Image (cartoon, rainbow, N blue to C red):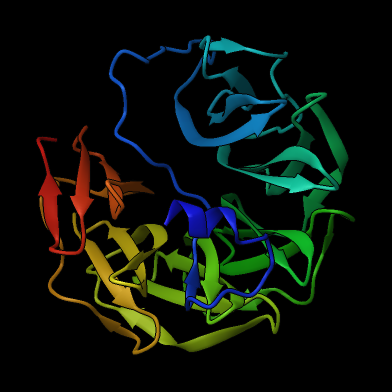
Length: 305
């Protein structure tokens, strides 16, 4: 699988129905751990990137800043990214014209683009949302890097990261705030997957800027997190909700795969994907204070929380 991933160019069509945007491999080495401190209020978002060969993390916080950390040393590499006037509740990374950037979303209703080499803001803020920008993801559409943002105004918006301008009209369909967004390739098409306070998961074609199929329904309450992965060679969406469950979806049939995955004792607020021993896994974080690792092929938890 790793060889296949290395051979897929961003934006290129793939023979598989669903392309992996990012993944990690090999089990974590528990001796390689750092505690990075510096924010003055709770953290709300984390993303990773590689800059000049160094693995970095970008964090967003209630203190209205984003910070960039060297994951090898656990130290900040530059002053805080401080331009937002509200909590920084979403972070994603991308590459624009060969330079690594971070995209941050805030309760001040804007998203901002930051050059991770210079730690300076790029262009003007991305404005248009009428409420907090709750989630950000990045993708490549027709060869150009884009950001996908969602927020409390019930809309999803697509932005050209080269020009910092919105592409097309807002994507509408959710009936309440849109809390989560992820991106992937579906049948060679770049898509966004969103989860909303209306309890639905929706798939959007980023080229046509329109919804794909019917909403995915099944959660009892808000959908708080979404990720995409491939299980058994088939594309899958995984959503986490206010109902304490993870749910796996087949975007082709617009149906849930199997029963809800249970184990958490509170809301599932965050998820990420990884490839461990050549198998796709999902890591979920909950308001119960636990991280859990799931092998979703048999829908089983791996190890202890």
